[in-house]
Every structure is written in C-alpha cells, then in structure tokens.
Length: 453
Image: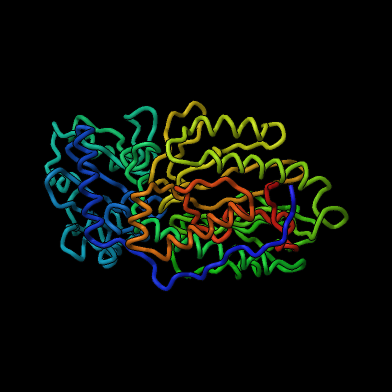
C-alpha cells in the first residue's frame, strides 16, 4: 500500500453559512406532530440546556445559553418555549419566534442561581394551561433514550412535575435520534449545506494545525491554528501530545516533541474532524515506531476501504459492524466504540453500526467515518470526517438550492476514487476537505496513504 504525495482538494469557507428559514422549521414541526400521532402521544416536552440542546434547536432554531429550557408541543397548537431570564433576549435567534409561530414564557427557576424567582408561574400551572392532564399521553425528550421506555432523560424536577399530572409519560427521544427512523437522521438540503460549511471550517483548521506542527512548541500555541470562527462547538476541541497525553483532553501546556504521537479534533455543528499520527518524517530513530505504517496504518486503511465500499443506501448496519470487527481484530486494533456513527448539531446522535443491527442506511444520514483503533505501541491512526448519504432526489434538491456545495462534494468524491483508491458510491457526499486522508507522519504532511490500484 503506497505512501503518495498529492495535493488534497482544498476549498475556502463559503461566504454564507446556510440557515433554515421559518418554513423549514414549520415543516419539522409538522413531521414531529405526525411522529407524535403515530406514537399515540398528545404532548411532547423537549428539554434543552447548553450541553444537550440539539433536539430543541432542531425544532426551533433556539439553543439555550447558560440556562435550561423546555418546549411544550401539543397537537393542534402553536408550541410554547419556556425559558429562564437570560434566554428571553436570545429568543429572536429562532426563525419561528421571529415569525410569531413560537410562543414563550419565562420560568424563573430555569434562571441562574441568585436571580429572582418570584415573578413566574409554577411549572405545573404552565403544563396544565397547555392541556396536560391526567389522561394526556406525554413524551419526554432530552438527549438519550433507553431500552426501558419509562426511564426519562430530563431533570427529575421536570419529570416529577409531568408525572404528577399525567399517568402516561414515556421517553420519546427516539422520535428524533433513533438511527433508522429518527427525524434528525433525514437531513435536508439546507442542513447538508450548513454541515458542509462547518466541515470546511473544521478540516481547514485541521490542515492549518498540521502545517504548523513544530517540535518545541506548546499545544497551546498549536491550538491557535485551529481556525475558530465563532460557530458553536458540537464537542470540546482537543490537542493531545507527549508521553503524558490524556484521551479527550484539551490543550494543557504539553510540548510537541519529535517521535511522539499527536492527536486533535475540531468539532462544530455537523462536523468533527479528528486526526492522530506521529510527530515525525518517517520511522526509526526520532520517528514513529518501526512497523507503524506497514503493520498498523495500512491494515486500517484497507479496512476503511471496505467501510466506504459498504457505505451505500440500503446497507445493513450490523453487517458493516461485523465485517469491521473481522478486519480489525480486537487483540491488535482495540476498536472500543462503534465503527461509525450519526452526527448532527450534536457530535453523536446514535449509530446504525452495532452487533446484529438491522438498521438500513437511508438517504439524509450524516455519518462520521469514526473507526478508532488503539495500540500500546503504535497508539492510533484516524480519518474521522463527515459523509452524507443522499439519493438522486436529495442530490437534485441540493443542486437546485446549493449547486456549489454539491460540486465541491463531487470533487472530493472523485479525489477519493481516483487518487486514494476508495470505492465510493455516487450517493456519498464527502463534506470535509480531508476526505479519507491519512497523513501518518505529521512532519511530512504531503505524504498520504492510498489503496493500491
């Protein structure tokens, strides 16, 4: 398997960040109400906070800052969002709110500690005014669902209040996050274009970081090259290097050293660009461990070649999971997480890739090529980026609304096929400017791994 020198396609950040308008949010509410009706629910209460706001933000365009928030949605009524004191001034971020299609009420217990709590109604009164009663069938939505439907993923004071009124209360987070049917697993053309924007920012930031690597600099100095442009993060950004590196850690003052591994990630809504390799120009003294590319990176890239070959509409998640476990045996590659997962406003939505999964990959899925090997000597390698599955109709919609976005995705796909040797289906849209790229030696970033032709 050759190491080649090539120019990886690089596109600048588009001038405009695509955003959904009120009409698209109205459509999301229509689809949510249909899902509620199928589940026999009269109400949804959707919880959000700074860390867990994706479902609420997808429904309204509003992501609470500092405080908690709760959306109360019932069939046949304009939704109500309940917010703390500081979030009231942030509500115009929502296109629905600006269009007069989202009501709001201040609930001061959502406010920060010490702020007045004397001038708002009790949550029970708010819920009852939204027609929540004993016979209501209420679905609660946070950010995680469980095999036991009665386990709610919202704070207990909210769960207790809802259960104190209605007799039938269930976890309904799967409406949005189930890998086969969740509403947020069917990305629209606008969502794809927005996620392509964030993937360009993230991957260009990673390219900038890699280009800046020099022994002797601190990880703090290196992180200055990551290219933050003001968009909200989907997860913490990390830079980890040196013998005392800690998984998932942010930059902490470690010094970049020749002959040490380095990993980093840049996460924005719909994007998480992550790489891990060695601060070296090759193997041997002062470089990567002997055998790193031949024994570890090349088998991994070959396995990812099959991952991409299987990444197509109708593929069964469990079959990909099983095959990747065969190709990357646990005693060598120690892949602990699933071989890929769904991404959206949040970094990990859910995944169709797990043992015996019968989930079929469908159009609109945004998926991370997140297969993470680890090794006591070789440490790791990585090509984590975002790819969208889009059938002919969705690609046609993307071409009509965002032709430049589609053209860039096609150029990246062609690069993966013709230069890197991956069998990438027509329905695959690579969103990152590092699609399928592995640079095993960070001091020689022009060298990338390609499959044999």
